[in-house]
Image (cartoon, rainbow, N blue to C red):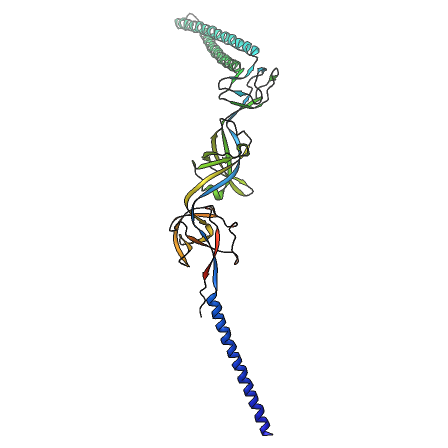
Amino acid sequence: MKTKKNRTVLWIIIAVIVIAGGAAAYWFLIRDGAEEVAEGTEETISVMEALPGNVSVRVEGPSVVEPYRIQEFRSQVSATVLRAPGTGDIVEAGSVLVEFDGTDLRTAVRQAELNLTQAELDVDRAELTLNQAEATLADRERLYSEGTIARDQVDTARDIVSNADLSVEAARIKVSQNELSLTKAQGDLSAIVIRAPFSGVVLDSQVVIGENANPGTLLLTLADVSRVRLSAEVDEFDIGKIQPNMQVEITSDALGDESIRSRVERISPSAQIVNNISIFSVYTVVDNDEGKLRPGMSADLSILISSDRGLIVPSKVVSSVRDRSYIDVYQDEEVVTLRITTGADDGVNVAVLEGLEEGALVVVPTTAGLILSSDQASSSSGSSIIPISVPGTGSR
């Protein structure tokens, strides 16, 4: 019985030795295979060639074309319209815009002149009466001093002088009133002809020949469109980048493939709140001799904030540490980090001004382990992302 138990224990020991040996052999095989795989592994990275190009930073916004100068004309008199332009008519500076019938107004001027003449005669008459009253008063005061007349006669003469003096003042006031009436009548008469203060086009004519126009009636609107003003709305986040005299590019459907270049004329000093956002207006003025831009047309303004020429790379490949910029490049079969100086950055591409050589292979980060195709990642420099293999660095 004891011999049977010893044999059982012996078999168990042999089984354990066999299993342990097999496990050890399997571990060594796995380790050697992993080392061989690690030694043969290659890491794939994406690179693109740094080529010369230009990066521009712009602030863009829609705008509406407005006349450089615009003026409304209203009637200053009540008279019949004899002459007036129509909407769209082109007029020269100094030419007659509107003419009224001045018959009644000429009569009013003549009547005012006569009234003024009469008032001036009344002053002369009142002054003569005053002089006579003063002479009478002086004579009575002499007689009273001699004791030949009573005191009440002197007082009466003095009252007559006072009244005569008041009459003179009243007559002079009447003259002033008639002078004002004459001035107004002459002004009304001069207003029967309205002349153009500048050359332009009649944007809107409300006047009808033969009808009577009352004071304050809107007659027409004249605009100078040889130059036009455009304004773009810019929010508070971008307005700080814009300064007067910055370059502006204007595009519009009316211009087709052409564009017009101008400069920032001025910036509104205060903002308007639109949907809880502070909006500023940026203005520019351009020549419009050919009349391609008309009031009310829409256009797009593109304001150049900065522009640099250098080696163009995607913005995402540049990292910054304490105001210093760095970029990874592939050279001599390894990835090397270089310190660079950057210029304009439009959020997609950045211009590298120093620290990078033309043609250098810039390492481009991949997204979620995927490599972007060349079509997806082409830059403004014309360079495309190219996947390359780098020898593995697995360790034993």
